[in-house]
Image 1 (spheres, rainbow, N blue to C red):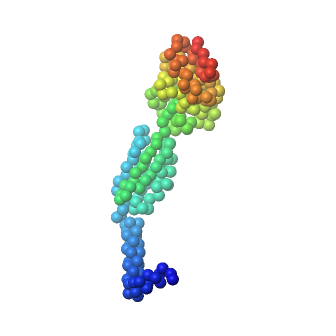
Image 2 (cartoon, rainbow, N blue to C red; image 1 turned 90 degrees about the vertical axis):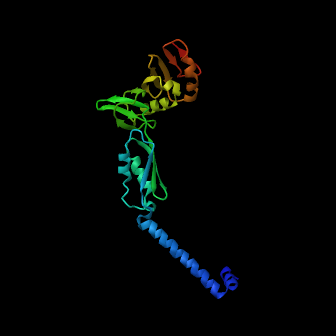
Image 3 (cartoon, rainbow, N blue to C red; image 1 turned 135 degrees about the vertical axis):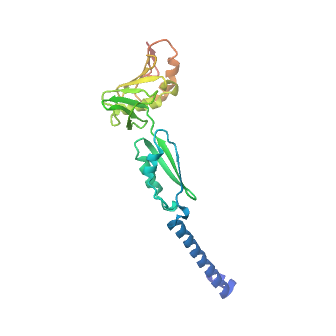
Length: 233
């Protein structure tokens, strides 16, 4: 015996009809509510919250979001909007979320310079992904990259970025210039005139562990390119 037949026998013809009627009424009400939410301003976007901005203006983000007036929160394409915001040169990534009943929340991860190199048109800023994202005055404390062919597509530049990302913060704030002759010959010139010969991007954890204690010694050149055999001159 099927469940429908069993329910019909328990409820009787009248009870089964009422059950079907209430089920149909529920579907109709739900359809109406969804239609109201989808096609009317009942759930329209009224507030836009933007987090994570430092160097980018809210106007730039609003322009890329491009949300028409009165558009229902249910009808916005959060993925497409996040992709448009992420197309801003200084944006590393973006996330767009619905917050009912009427808010769009945008979280922006801005690109931050870890190196810069000089060029005829000005200083090029490079982030930790080795992406050139701006031509403007470098932030205070960001080291200058000196290499033959600087740029995001240059293997030596990418190696220098990897090295800068690996050095301890206490050393990073002392670095004034990164001299990259090759992917395996990278040196750090400190603000006090001393030089740390880092070598390549390999064995970074071991180099990071020995470099700060080494810098407490007297000397001008500190070589950690072979971390098991460091030297000071």
